[in-house]
Amino acid sequence: MSSQTVGHLALLPLYAAAGTAVLALLADLFTGRRVVTVGATLLGTVAVAVTAFATATAEPTFCVPGGCSWLPTWPAAVAAALFAALTAAVLVFSTPALRLGVAPAGEFCFLLACSMTGGVVVGYAGDLITLIVGLETLTLPLYVLVGLRRFAPGERVTTAPAAASLTFFLVSVVSTAVALLGAALHYAATSSIHLTAPFPAAPPFAALADVGAALLMIGLAFKVAAVPLHAWAPTVYDGAPIPVAAYLSTASKLGGVLALAAVVARLDTGAVVAVLAVLTMTIGNLVALRQSRMVRLLAWSSVAQAGYILAALALGSAGVAAALAYAVFFVILELLAFGVLSALRLPGDDGGTLDDYRGAGRRSPWLGATMVLALAGLAGLPPGLAGLFAKLTVVETLVAANWTWLAAVVVVNAVVALAYYVRVGALLYTLPPRVGLSVADPVLLDAATHPHVPVPFPVRLTLALTMVAAVALGFAPQALFNALL
Image (cartoon, rainbow, N blue to C red; front, side, top):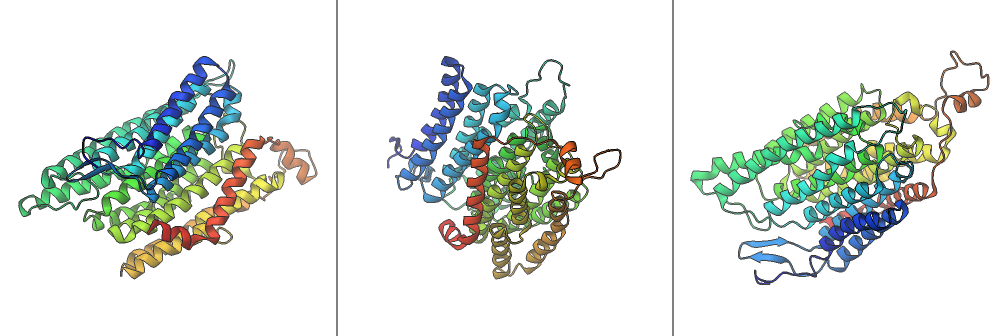
């Protein structure tokens, strides 16, 4: 395809995603009805998934002699469909809060669709400029979504959402500046930005290229909450609404993994990524052991999970398939965990402490079993076969590449993580203490201290579909792995 021709067929997923954002805004403007706005956004996510698969074999576009900037492929289509599915799930989890007016539906749906658009761009990006623009489009709406909260008259006003939003913004600005500086230095040394072409550097500029590659990696590592730009995650996750925290932990992290995978496959950054992986998984697991709040625990767990992904990416192109497979399994299990939290908490509430979930599995057996499946998968234990396969894939890939020491670090950290995953799972079925309460029956006592929260049918259906996806991936992991290859 010539450089003067724009392949509109290949761009259909982008048009569908951007059109979803515009449609949500217009639906809210002309109808003012929450149901219409949410419904239009959900239909838009379906359109993104359909157009992505329908155009997976389209011709690349925005091409020049050095390469193409938009690359329709099956992995890109899967990524776009996954971003659309995550957006739809988070929107469904947010409907109880939107119904109560905790956040304005029009603005919420518009920003969420804009973030989805950035995710689609990341999946199809063929050069560094498109990749970084896609990542920023994915991230920018989240600054607002994290702090988007209305307080009812008489309700206690908390500054946590605003503080989380400001923290996220400031750290993101720094990481973006580092990534752009790295990309600029690398381009100055190699005169190449396309991801499909090799990044050779002439001998006089080899050192400059290495510095640029390292800075680019560190800047992109922010998106997956990797060390050293990791400390924002617990504060932001805990201050954000639970569904938004779910999106940060899944869609935003998936965008970062895709960006890192695209870069490490063509850069010699193995040593830098290996160091980041060891520090990230170790710090994440050790700090998670000391957490008393549920969302902060999951946030530090998410940091550790990013370390496992980075361990595979340390191999360069040889570890990309394992890293992407792990990322797919991780985001589905993480979505399941945060979905259960949103179902167990009142609309608009924060994640609460670990003790707030004591006995939740007894009060809501189905939600308790769903949470146990998510925790087991994240820990790499049966019946969470998806998570077990993901960790085995990373370890086997590292051993096959003679990186046995890094595989050993992954295994040791996985064992350490069992402590807090098992702790949370046990709390779900532990009755609260009777101190200070007059109810004699422990079951009645539990019901008195933790009133039942009704779960809307769309939320139950979304959780069920997510759980089916997690179980199905556990029983058919090799097919996914082969597809990512």
